[in-house]
Image (tube, rainbow over all chains, first blue to last red; front, side):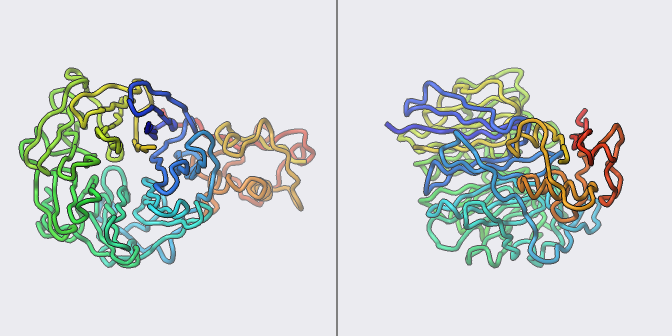
Length: 370
Length: 98
């Protein structure tokens, strides 16, 4: 029988949750790296026991940890993220130029075929890669040095590269998303980049056709429809059917189109999930009800999923990297909250249960189907 | 031998228990001790001082013999008590965070 491993990054350490294919009983291991902010953990598709984790604090900076046994033991690897060449400037909040400065690693994306080749998205926005299992990291500077870079400005969370999608169909194609710059696409393994933000309408940006400056919170893709991209923008849920060349809004009947994560069902490429949040200042669910919304039509028509989720007095948030799916026949959906709960649905979202109730605030959730 | 006391997070990171004992060649300055520490434990590079600027991280402090040496230059010689091993050089995680 298959089993499932859930990698949970929190503000005060990492946790590894394991269950068999029934997903009824969960073993929780951790905290690993107690007291450290674990922005993201992710396993290699090429070797599921090879895990990478981003570990940081404001006190002692950035570390990267690697496990070769599915998270039982960890070894620190190289943690120097040095920009390649002159850093140049991006925009600061007050509109003045500000030199790029490394803050932390937000997202780790192992490649499909090589457990030693991994991308990392960092703040201030840049893309790094290791080809030796984390022994050394090197910037791919074509992104940061894009001519629009001087116009990129941080969102409230910083100028962070938070999403990396490796296209499953076209070799060399990849997407990244940066708050608050937008989405960028490369067709040559990250050497050169094109901003792909046409159709994004962002309140507060005077130019509706602005090439960059959009606060994209996350993008998602299904392997069977590589040209279809879904986006949770700061406000608005968006969809592209042409690999990001153009976007249209699919927020439809959502109670709020503000939110952070967006995820695609493992087996149904038009089934997508979001967690509506009341507003960008309140950062909690509308009406105190924690509801995942599912669309089975690729957007526009949404249904609330509530069975097993708190429906009163709930004021948590779900952050952008805190939702994931497993690949079992009946797709499991998982998300973590800033209140420290991890919820799991074994039936595509119809019903939910809390599989970890009292963790530190959850920063990321990833799922491995073993 | 120079005795160095690390905060708990850095002891865990470097996988050491208790104090660290270091051979420090030449004059025993703050910088020489930190260099020796980072040579012995590369995982601590960047955790005490910034990788690039080599400046002390804002929430890290240096103490020895009841004196705060955090803002002294890296060329500052450490007190004789530290050089003799009678007193440790302390790397401290500042109390911050509310």
